[in-house]
Image (cartoon, rainbow, N blue to C red; front, side, top):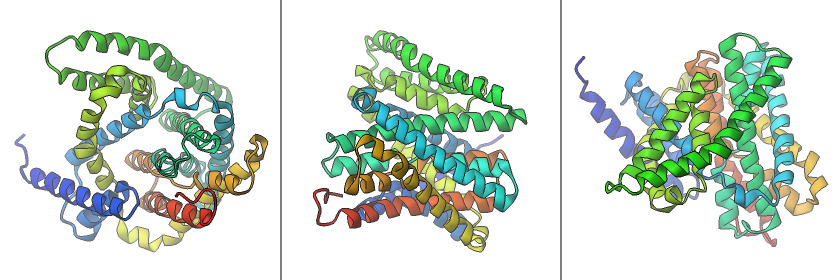
Amino acid sequence: MPFDVVLLVDIAAIIIVAKVFGEIAERLRTDAMIGELIAGLLLGPMLAWVTPGPFLENLAFLGLLMLMFFIGLDVSYDDIKRHSYAGGVLALFTSLFAFLAGLAFGFFVFNSMVIGAVIGVAIMGTSTAIPLKLTSKAGMIKTKLGQVMVSMSMADDIATIIGLSILVKWLTSGNIEVVPAVTLMFAILGFILVIMAFGSKVIEKILNIFSKMKDEQMLVAIPLAIAFLIAYASEQLGIAALIGTFLAGAAMSGNRHVKGSIEPKMRTIGYGFFIPIFFAYSAMIINLQSLLQYWWLMAVITAIAILSKILGVYASGGFYGFKGKEMGILALSTIPRGEYSIAIAQIMLGMSVIASEVYGALIGMAIITIILTPILLKAYTRRSYYAGF
């Protein structure tokens, strides 16, 4: 079948518009992801310049896999060991509150446990990049509060990954009982531990071999190839492929070859091409008419996403000595959704589990929470010791 050269124009338009709007978003002190999503809205449902199709969908999926790989690379367990228990418990509480709130909302509004479970899992995960970026900018990364926020963010990633794995397994198998669900959870944890513990050692040896070769680009290609192979293995085990690339990134997070000169080159490929296409495509397939018609759905899901996490922090933060401003900052840092919400929404739409109005509401919720977080933190910490956000 001949290649449709019009796709080249579509890809060029997506990259240019997404990167330009991403730059504008960053100049406005928000995440580039927002600009790339807005670019997708403009190119797709608003102006109809680009038509979504199978080829663009596959490119976007590669972007999603690379995004999860880079999130995994940012999981540094050396940085979170000291406060791993506190961060883990806080993440468990906030994730559980968010999941149960989403589950209840989906059940009562749509009379569907499946839609409730999707909403619950989609609002479980706080965007990793946002709180890390904010704490680093405020000079708090080395404080107890900053380290707990980092630890909590990493543990949140794992909780969301486990939640998504169980959800996908449930949807593909048709039913799931308590004992198989618990067995699956431990199987997923085991898979994670095997990849993290033994995978990192195997990967280290593989990269040591390829590092001796003359082709310096080999060390850029091999980590990505390993990530895709682990993604394939995880898919075969009934766990989503994106979880495989996340684990591959986490297994390589402490590798001297990857964290040296290789990672910047891989990020150039990912954030220069594939990842902007993923975010833009995620917005391109939104049904704008449905989103406007069901604006209340987006508003309610956003409120549930924000309040459930904040309540989770206030319910558990006091056990670890947090109070006053510190408790408030910790709570507000859990607000932003992003990568996970968008990825989960796109997967569930692709599986025909959710309708376009729920998909649009979840994407809209992610955008709103990312924009709100720095504004709320700045307002909350004004004229205080923490006024650095």
